[in-house]
Length: 292
Image (cartoon, rainbow, N blue to C red; front, side, top):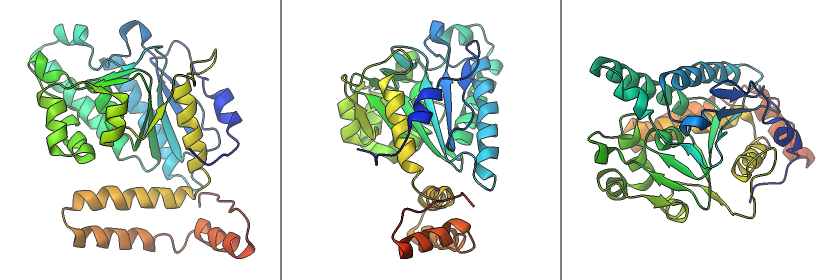
């Protein structure tokens, strides 16, 4: 599906990072950073430690994305668990918290996912099997979602006496429409991967034939192939195009959105990537973008 580009360096070095960390992080390879949720004993449930670690990593990714030349063009979020991306909030930890602590945790999670959603770089969630509650909200904060064909996606919070509180009630309707989102949120409808694809919640499915190997699951490998395809384009242009789409949608009117688009387009004029794109077109060769 994705443009074929050399991605072996991404695939072979993607699992680097401290094995004991709740989030494993790879150094940027070809401008791609991989963050792997690593609480398999708790189904990658989102506790205070994991959310704080995620927050720190997102800040670092933002710094790399804003550097010139761009040092991080794509972020991939993956899972170290064999059967799940994330089960959502850690209910065992939450049961031991006071109401004030629960409120603070939810606010921190919401802010962290907003930081993720507003990263300048492109973000991809690799969904191995299930993503539930806050785990699905984490994926919703990404630009793209790649899922295994056997994945189940759900927001079960209303059955627990709460509601999605980390952006799910806002991001899901923007992706699949209000009526469909209410089915998932109010009725607790569990979406199979194929249904999620048809609704536009998932961008691409990974068939069972692309199974987990000794070094990497097929879903993460597919997300990295998608990242490699994105790398054929200007990192600066990708950032500006993402900003134009996201800020334009949130602006509330077409007129405001068009003004945002115009401003973003104007920012490309003085970039090295724009000049390289024009040169490459004239010389009939692939462009060699530097992210400047």
